[in-house]
Image 1: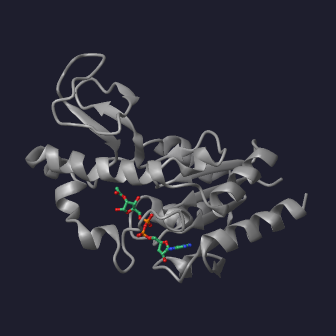
Image 2: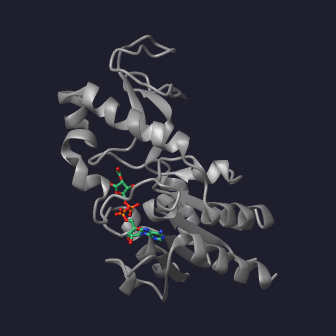
Length: 231
Ligand code: OAD
């Protein structure tokens, strides 16, 4: 099979009941991004930021993968060498659907990180500002989430995958947040074909060779069935 890089966003998990960010009623209409998703907001009020991510961790634990997560895991199982799964999502629904080696460029709710020594460990369901780091004991515990103004994780590996890929597919992302929003241009510059699967046209739809519209739970399994049918 040809090489495929798949970038997912909040739309992939919307039908599992996890809210998106910028749709009507989305997370950034209910919360002030500056207060809960920036290093400055965390410095001002760590308890508020932990409370926000504790609530999202609880939502995530109560959610189940949908047909789109399962279809992507099936595609990866069928062609583990060909498929690179990159996600902006901090939930673990792709993993719980059976996917492996998912590149979480914006971090993961299930991990805690020490801002002092960089140690990573499994996040407890409820994190608090004075939780000590299990490695260095510093009281500088934060969620392993990439906030606005911070560098996304794994950019080198993602860049290499975009350079090598034959097809780039973006699923359920509005194309508002860089660097992920720029991956379609990067992939095209390296000669890849590009496909967008989204509920509605996004800000970056015009950059894709093709856009297919509909809910992820329908259009992702349809697309995967088509790809597996070509085997
Ligand atoms: P957004 O909320 O910006 O966009 C979600 C996209 O999914 C929109 O284009 C919706 O139309 C689409 N969508 C909604 N429901 C869908 C469904 N059932 N099926 C398919 N598509 C659907 O979320 P992201 O693009 O993921 O970062 O946001 C990117 C980053 O901004 C997030 O990782 C987060 C946020 O601020 C940080 O917190 C650092």
